[in-house]
Image (cartoon, helix red, strand yellow):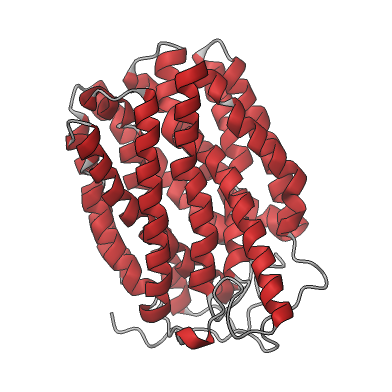
Length: 420
């Protein structure tokens, strides 16, 4: 059992099982929507006429919107619970994902990406908050399986985009199909989520600040900062595949856009396979093992992409990259969500926010560097960051002398009080 997940105190109820299914569905539809945007990047760049450097800077707007949305969601969850916030954020998300493909210049694209970022950030925090609650109820590692469904959604969305482009349809049609499916699935799945009676704000310790004892506050702060740094590095690496894999195949290997979309699809499928198996590995060997060797495999994978002269070998590189990164982020989110049960959503929003600065805004750095040295050479940045993660992976393990915020067992939510 992962040391970050408290032991279950009761058999798993039918209500908890339904909630698990609902969280699976939410992760799927969010991944579906994100992939619809990612595979449309080459078409959006062509339509708006922006350069690599400009596109990279506009991704900063997307990242900034995501971070703002995450912090708003953290406090909103503390007041209303993650079920309500997930529903509201997902409604905005399925609308906002359609905006970028209709823009005609850098200004309108920037506005569209800001709105999309706000929605994406809010739904990311709320669904991960709900996932932590469900995982705590199960009492064993299941977080990676939730993230696997995000990867499944990503693969499906990428294939929809590739098929639509291959048949000659505009990319806006593919995005509309994916977002419509996400909307229908979201309505069904949100109803299955667990209600939550959040702790009053005066009882929360916001990322190590508040009413807790000084030693506890320092311990929480150190862990939040450490997790945030590691999340930034590893999710930046993941963001490279999300934002640049298809474009890399177009430019570096002269592949058509319809075929190039398979680069991201390969990565997404590999992430799925890894996340469906890594929970057992984390339960047996611990989170540090997953982070260390996963980061090492990711470094090897992105290195393969950089030196590959042919598309099939490039796909192998993206597959190894995805397998390596598959379990690292879920381990960080589980650990962050269990640092403090009284301020779970706020702390989680800090760590998720730091990670998504890497995933959504960090690739902007790759875009800027690509403008100087080319996109392929710019991939050296995620390779270096994965190597750093190999070294600092032990911070994920909970120290033997860590100070708990509360002596008693965390209070489980009331699974029977939902009237949705």
